[in-house]
Length: 437
Ligand code: ATP
Ligand code: MG
Figure 1 (cartoon, protein in one colour):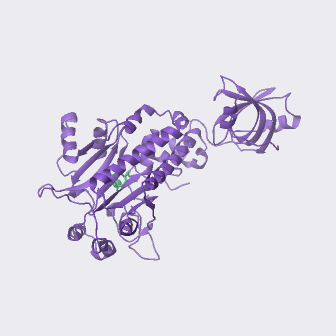
Figure 2 (figure 1 turned 135 degrees about the vertical axis):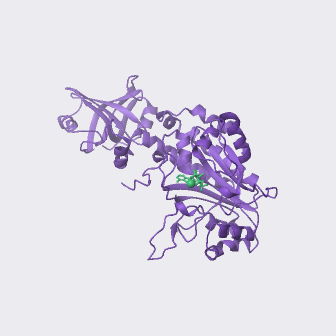
């Protein structure tokens, strides 16, 4: 076929006349003198009808061997057909089988584990295709947002020699027999040194956490969009987080309407995020709300668990920024504000809790500037100060107020798409029990 191929979406937009398309067989139904094929490409699906007396004998014979996922080229007349899955149909005049398929091992009744075993093939499903398109928009929109605000893209190492988010989720690496090498949990300790040069930086990179618990929100390898800014105060950090979320959601609503439809996502649930200012409440206020609304008694100083986050999120239709967490539940680098109380010390840390039970999507903070306070906290956590000497240099040579946050890209995608499990937000999910395929 010499004709220029167009995508199925372009063919549907053309709506009538001759078209040439190519793709994979999504469904097929063979009758005596007629074959129905639903062809799929990256853009959409379309029903194609092949009549025995319209095509050559060779074409008809080839067609008899076509199964789901065979790849084909098709030329024919497109017209509106209300009963077809996407409202259009092609009457086929010519066809060419590019490659036959064996019996495709994915059927309707496969359970979740079998679908994960065959993930490399399940990626071709309409559901996964829609999610991956949204994922692509999300990554693009994150880059777009930060670059439009004058941030430089910057990269930190994946092999690291210090921990940052707690030893219990560190992945140790056998690094030529050396023991103290870990996979990055975050870029942060290697990002802070760079703000003295570039001032505003961001990245999107994999983070690794040895999460031993099975939840629908944790992966062992996830993509982390992180930012760090010099001269910024706590308020500005929160503002960047809110703007980023709004920008990305807006882009997905603009670009991925049909994908959200395939996922049966109720987009009305995302709209308040664009229109409303996100509430900001303190940890102490959260405890009060949980007590008033749900009779939950959380003692001051306990971290918020999934159940508390979910109850809290049920009170709002946008993400909510929770601030002023107890110092004892947050990392060593978070700043204690001047008005922090001696008996109940808090830090300028912020978690953005997504609506609809999707949990924390952003964790951020203003960074502690007092080197002695940082050392004291590292010691309390049993860390070897010498390992952190390079990091402490950020507070020795012209320290400035600064802060940043990390956004879990798959958590964000799960919420945007309304997914039941974070595993579907990434092509090949990695969890405690799964590293294959
Ligand atoms: P959580 O309490 O939910 O485990 P965290 O406090 O450990 O989160 P941070 O260390 O603040 O999370 O990491 C920043 C962001 O990275 C989180 O807000 C979340 O969106 C995401 N994130 C953290 N751990 C995971 C994980 N195991 N899988 C996917 N995303 C994660
Ligand atoms: Mg965690």
